[in-house]
Image (cartoon, rainbow, N blue to C red):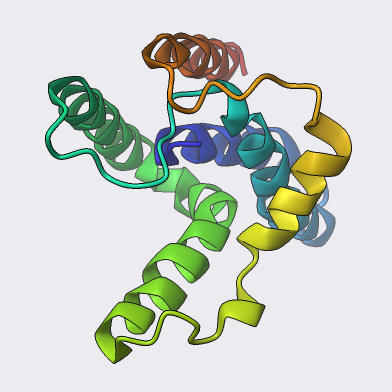
Length: 160
């Protein structure tokens, strides 16, 4: 799933739970925002989410310009006070994609710390609980389910 979706889920979790008694609310935000990544990424099967960049495809480029711009707007607009809800909800991507795979590219070692990646656990979770979802990752029309989810999450944020 795209960063904006993780950001919005993290915002909702923090907004709803932080009003609980402080220590309990903080602990619940951390745990639920972190594990929300499993659910959100499990739904990625029905979204336009190709494994590798498609720099030759104008649709892929346009979609990613739009989605990255929207993510940046959400990040800036909601930074205060929701930076940590967004950050925790995105922590798995930061760890796997930026840290492990980033260093892996620098080291030129495709297997560096592979056994410490979290996304393979998400793949197992998706297979166990969401195998029934169709795989639309390569279908352009699959931008629609993610757009609908983003709108629903924005409406929820507006209502809370």
